[in-house]
Length: 166
Image 1: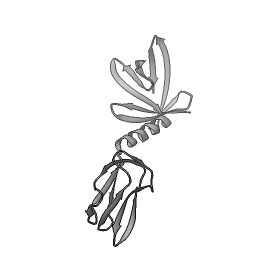
Image 2 (image 1 turned 135 degrees about the vertical axis):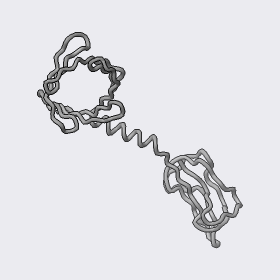
Image 3 (image 1 turned 90 degrees about the vertical axis):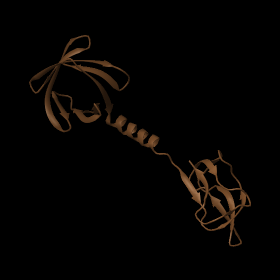
Image 4 (image 1 turned 180 degrees about the vertical axis):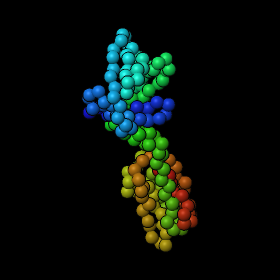
């Protein structure tokens, strides 16, 4: 069985083609027959109603389709392609940003990284003295340091943003 996600005018339809004269659109069964006319023109019979259609490929998943003279742009993806596209859209939409804040008041003793440096999760970024103890302030996520908001010798209060990682 072939399964596709067909998008027309921002509306997605789940289309299943089991390989016979039946087609399922959003789990509704339709009887269909496709007749070749010429070039890229076909006659499509769906539940005893006839449609003249022609289709041309725009790119690997977009098609220009004309149904009885009405022109549409149609996006056709396999279920796997649709899942991959959604993942890509989510990844592009989400900007990972982590602000590391001071857990307690203290004094910045040493800055080991600078803005623009890459860090891995757990890597030391700076040393903060608090209550007469040196505390290693580490990156909580991997990424690139977007900003360092302190200087060596600077006093900070609890909750002050020390650095940001993207």
